[in-house]
Image (cartoon, rainbow, N blue to C red; front, side, top):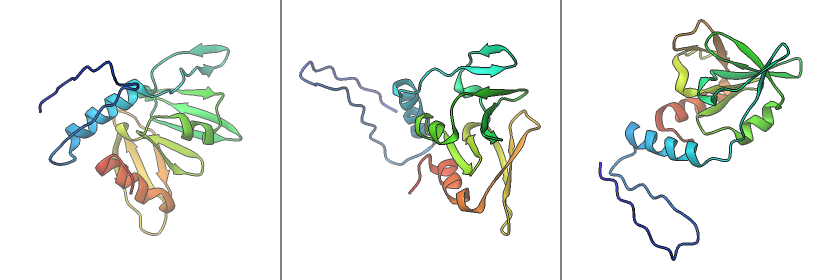
Length: 152
């Protein structure tokens, strides 16, 4: 892979163009890194009891709602957030995908999806006992994001 940077003071805005023979995992990772570094995702504060926690979004396996409260799940813990799920869906990076009415998942942590044609499919995560279900309605979009990093 060649990387070239051209500097021209005539440009009003910076633009990154990726030229590739095919869209593969390396190109996807380059794309994701650029999007993550340039996204306007706000710094998030997570709450547990009376404490505030500050850690990168990459640590979050999934967000889910429970009685109108949104929780962020990490490998070993659960934290409360002040955002609503629909707000998170608008501000989170592309690696976070809606998988049901009550859950948004970080696809970089998914280990497996046990497909069930008649009901929801089970998602398991790397290095965690936690599991969530993807509804049939959202399964196709999740699979597209997992395979290609984008939806049609």
